[in-house]
Image (tube, rainbow, N blue to C red):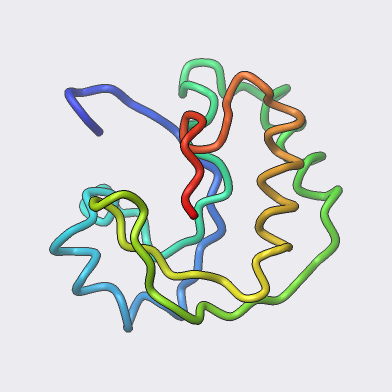
Length: 118
């Protein structure tokens, strides 16, 4: 959390990746220090904590449920800017569909503040 500002994110936990990336995350990822495990980010930033009520959670659940179940493999390490190392999922379409579905329900929160990773 930068400067005491709390933010939320929609993530898909990837517990199986933690043994592989945990030590790197501990050294370089502030979220690891907050107790956030290895994950794929679906939407960040998301609804502010004080607005994350039952209605928002129901809308989020409906958005997620609208995407068919899928499988993916984390296949390559890539950089977002020069600050964030991330693992690329293959195929990526399922995660893209999740992001699109959540963003469609929450249009005030574009992915990465409008700066999508490549």
